[in-house]
Amino acid sequence: MDREIQAIEPKTSTQKNELRLRVIYAFVMMGGGIFAAIAGGLAWALAGGFVMAVIANEWAGMSNASKQMQLGVTIFSAIFGFAFVYGSNEIKIIALILFIAAMAISSRKGGNIAIIGSIYLGLCGFAFASLRAHPENGILYIFGLFSVVWATDSAAYAFGRFFKGPKLMPIISPNKTWTGFIGGTLCGMFAASLYSVLANLFINPDDLLKTIIPWTFVGLVLTLASQLGDLLESWVKRHFGVKDTSNLIPGHGGILDRLDGHLCAALTLAIILAIPRLAESLT
Image 1 (cartoon, helix red, strand yellow):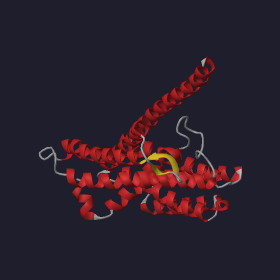
Image 2: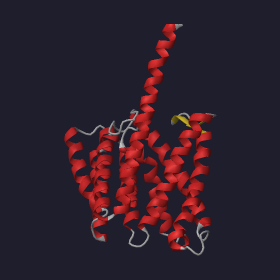
Image 3: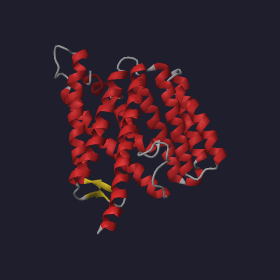
């Protein structure tokens, strides 16, 4: 019996340490993201360059690219990611095309999925960078995205961990549950509703509920997109036979592991904002 207890204790201790690291690094990343988003400009451009460089590195690594190819695409992608924010419209489009081309070439050993993924990640990263770079409502949009995705991630993890329940898609991601999916969706919508009220303290102080219905609807769409992005990334990792995209972030894996939901949600929000009436309804 004593031996059984001794065998269980180290495992429990390890789990606690992993959870502690996960929480610590989550707050560090949130702090960095909030700082870059508030500062905007050069800080956001540098963050964009760093994120796109790591995404390219991780994608090339999963696709079995050579070390030289990985290094090359990482360096070029840092420049392209910076240009997503700090460049004219023409430069931004050229940077997007070159980023996708560099990703596709470096990951060609991964086959069609790697090439399609290169296009998807390029569009998502470009959308993510462009949200904050919006000349009038950049902060409104990026913090709306953060609010929904962070609430969705946290609630899905908490509900799934404590309430468990039937698996959502065990073939793709064995740890995700329907309980976590529903909890994450509801909390993501609530976060969007609350965010709209708080934002209106500055935008529409005379009518705090002015944008609550549009933001709640957008919150539903974004929380679903965030969880779809998570599932897509899990499917791709299973396809390539890896557990994490890298070991860059203790307790989380790689940048793609951490930003999978953000990227899909950012692309979705960019599409929503391309519809004038929907964009106007959020302000």
